[in-house]
Image (cartoon, rainbow, N blue to C red; front, side):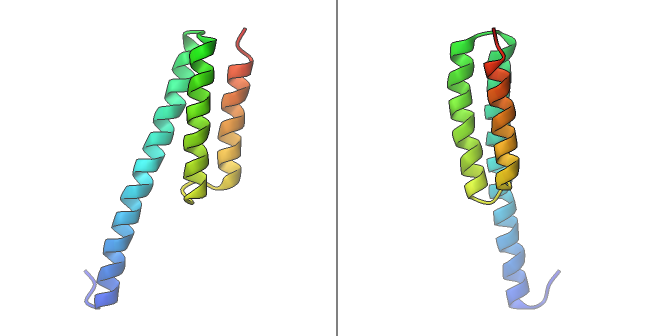
Length: 87
């Protein structure tokens, strides 16, 4: 355990930020799962609606620095491709 006051504060701040990042990553995973579930059921309307929500969630995560912008773009692109390939 740290003895210096600033080091103790850094530990607390890092813990807080890690929890925030975990929450954001979890919400991204949930939104991606919703898109994949809609694709599995072959419901194009639901898939497109879920894709819109997932895109927003992923973009917000990238803007907050949780994901790199290229990672966010890749995730969105793959989801959009999967939705567009539905018959």
